[in-house]
Length: 450
Ligand SMILES: Nc1ncnc2c1ncn2[C@@H]1O[C@H](COP(=O)(O)OP(=O)(O)OP(=O)(O)O)[C@@H](O)[C@H]1O
Ligand SMILES: [Mg+2]
Image (cartoon, rainbow, N blue to C red; front, side, top):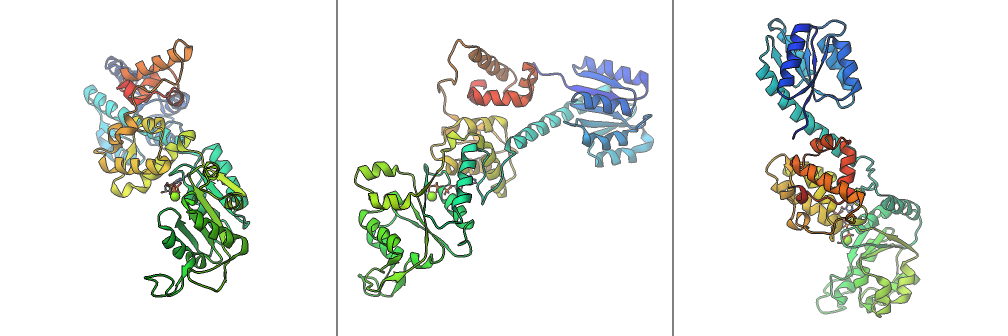
């Protein structure tokens, strides 16, 4: 069953108005009348309508006036304008003011019915999108870090406080949680911001190559060292050195780094002159360094040197409130492939998934969906199979409880209306936002209602 479309017929001609109310009621709509512009506005303020059939010539406030005023009404309806043959210019003006369409009098009820259905569809779509946007609200960019999670705001607060100091910072977090983004934010908010930020991946290169990259080498230091080459630490002078995946660094290199940190001096590979640099160190790892230390793979002295301040990034599954914000952001970023919207079912799937690859995995999933989506809306089928295919997961509530009954009821209702949130909310007689929260809280997955 569908929820009836709520229609307001605003026309001062009593007979015509009552005829329309009766006939549109027969078509299954939920219709009310208003005898003039003022009454129409009052009704619209009182409760939301999907569609208004608006006569242009009315006492008190004429149609155009009502249209202008509609921008101040919460959840404004779609407007179908009725106009006499003589004043089509009025209709054109009305379209400019955002009316959905217009009909000239005398009006055929069939025609009006079709227009009402189309307009209502558009109203629902707009409302869904407004809900999506509201959902993404509160995202304050902080050096490119988008979040609305309390835990992440704590992280941002630490960044703010530690950035202006010269203290070494250790950034911890699973792969793809935004460690490099945080390292850059620290740099950008430091007094070193005008100097270079130099990242180096500690696990990607064999030890010798890594050390000669980091510290540079003198001509003839090893086979292939045909010229003298300054190291990245020198490039980073006055700026920030970002040691990415420091947990992967080999013990020999760890000793050299530690020495450089303690003395502020280093030697190029094959060099004999001690060089001095002024770098601030930010390191990151997704390894448990405590465990690496116990396993003898990470030096204790280096560990204590770098972990004065640690910033721990929560995995995305522990801050699901960020998923909508980030997805929306990536959607806009990837709009070059086509401007797409996220259907609520797709968003629900994104929010239910556990994201082992965290924000980076989400970024790739959205990019892929933007490219794959056939229509304007990204639907669950456009998402990677692992995101939507998470069937049979244990329900979030134990059975036999009131919650589980409510959960069942919601699933059944969603199934009944093909997953349409607006319709389901109407059937359940709850606010769409409330329904949305419940879907998340009960971890109701799209495949349960399809
Ligand atoms: N809060 C955020 N807001 C906006 N973009 C983010 C956020 N977190 C991560 N990203 C983006 O996600 C991607 C992965 O982030 P980043 O490279 O910083 O993660 P990482 O923890 O260093 O990953 P890895 O462990 O794989 O090196 C980047 O494109 C980054 O811009
Ligand atoms: Mg990284």
